[in-house]
Length: 173
Image 1 (cartoon, rainbow, N blue to C red):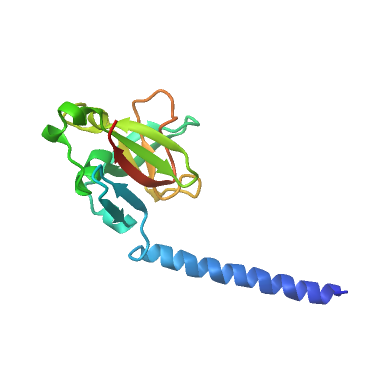
Image 2: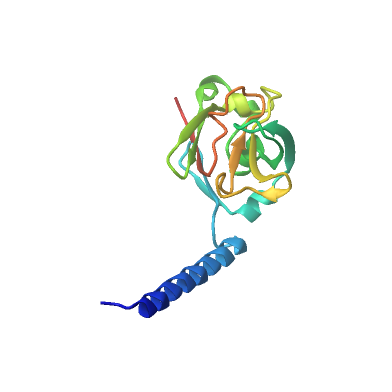
């Protein structure tokens, strides 16, 4: 059997190994260039992979809103329609006839999904704000929220304030 000294040494080695691996992961994630944060799939099947640094270069917007726990914060990110437009999704005058029924499925890392219609998020149809947030109160989003979160300040319930976003897909009904 192992004695207390051997067990202590093994514990120290495991903790140091975990710390080392975490620091490597954190540095790679910070680099952002080789990592992607979001996949956007258009209705034609075109797929765009965006890193956090690429998302950060899109037009920035901020909004003050309360989260699901009632805490008011300033959320900063990119308007959802700007992100979609940048990924080649047709909005504005292109939304007519059959495309009025197209919708966006936002999916989280844990498989949670929510739906938005394209006219609902297109500024040629509405003045409502749909924000793909990456900062809260001047800081990057926390572990709970992930790198990206959709913020919908005008909604009474927070069911579509989806956190840990990994995929946005355009679909036809």
